[in-house]
Length: 150
Image (cartoon, rainbow, N blue to C red; front, side, top):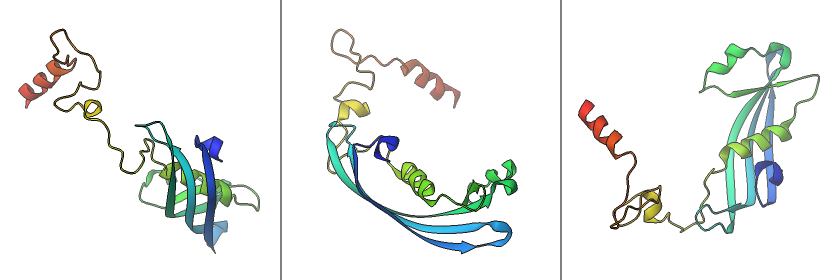
């Protein structure tokens, strides 16, 4: 699971489900996911430990009942197709962990340097400097054009 999610390690992982049978072979799974894992800080590139707890729900639907137009409501419970008599609650938990992971994890207390944020006193994100020490801002002309159009 760690390799699949691009993590150095997962120390512990559990997911407790409450399953409820619904009509037409549907199964509602309400779950609490708990994990301790190692991530790599995007600022320091050092590994750090993190703990996550997440509640989620998923509805398992027979694949013969799945329709593409059912997927359009973003506020509804996620629906996952299944075939035969088996539902894969382990896969649902793995997918949920992948969704809740921060794509840019930072160690607690580590701040992004000012020059990475393009703040005064630092280089802009491109890091390009013109002679004389001033920062070259390749999109400055677009910013001025945008202001004129308002």
